[in-house]
Length: 155
Length: 262
Image (cartoon, rainbow over all chains, first blue to last red; front, side):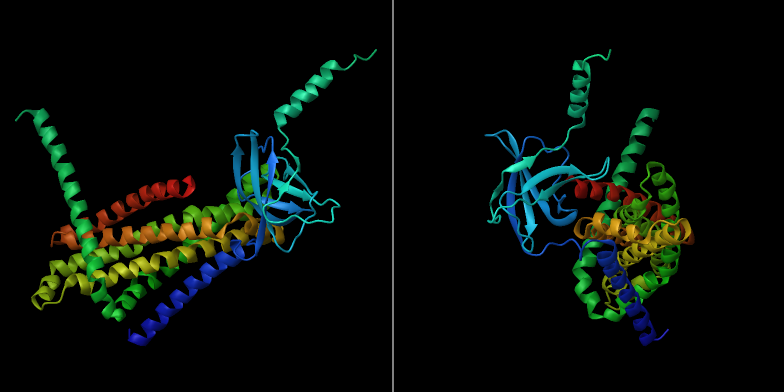
């Protein structure tokens, strides 16, 4: 086999490899869709975050508007401090609610932002004060059982 | 001699010879790296080897990737539909391929397809004293024979693994969407949301790079170290497959635990 044919084959091989990698990055991976542009970070305190993880999505009306940057534990207030990175294109009012929800019955947990009516918008480093903890299934069940037990028996 | 002493000395001999072989394989690896500047001066040698190790492995890689992807699609669907989440089939196929099957199966196939060829070739070169002849002419066989084959293997492996993953995903798509009837949009969008470029794609590439180095250096060392007889070469070829497969599987566990740990 002469040198040019060899070069063509190897060139083709490398080109296919790069194309496959690009395909994996664009079509299979989330290199294009989920990379946030410029972000601003805000924090939110929770009594209980359930199974929330760093890099989990921050959604508003179901649309991903940001990601969770990190989760720390505040030893002064004994609360979880969650840092959210939100895309600069989406400003939220200061009195926005940040609730922890679960997608589906057993799916991953995410933070849902529900906009309030304030004229001022959240800035870098702000704290969202209106938060709602993750629902803990055990607590819910025990509450339900407790309510059932205290109910008046039907006559 | 006392039979206990015999067993002990056998064991000692086994361990020492293994460590000795590991040491000389490492020496060969370091020598290859040192001489690689000289190997790259004749880049066409490396390109020639990429043709023989990479391009010629394409068919086996593409065909097996396609079947692996299709089987993953079928098995995944069968289990996932029990939990009513058959849309996640795309995620399952893509993650299984990118994280594990792509790099590992490619490396195993590579060891069988290209590794054996390298060992047999170098073993035979040694048996027919071509390597000694080169040394006589002041041509370093490490720079001229070992180096190009090493770099060809290292370059080919990540490329082959990427092709394997991509073709596998296509195979999974073919089973899941037109044949079973999973929604086309859900298949891709679920995959897109749950596969992370850095964590899944890049880590898979790192794995296949490491496997490439391991498989190629094992194949080269076994060939270089083979006794210059027909029997010696045949044993060395067998050892290449066994050692590379075990090394790949062991390294895979170590690499995965490092990647998941952070």
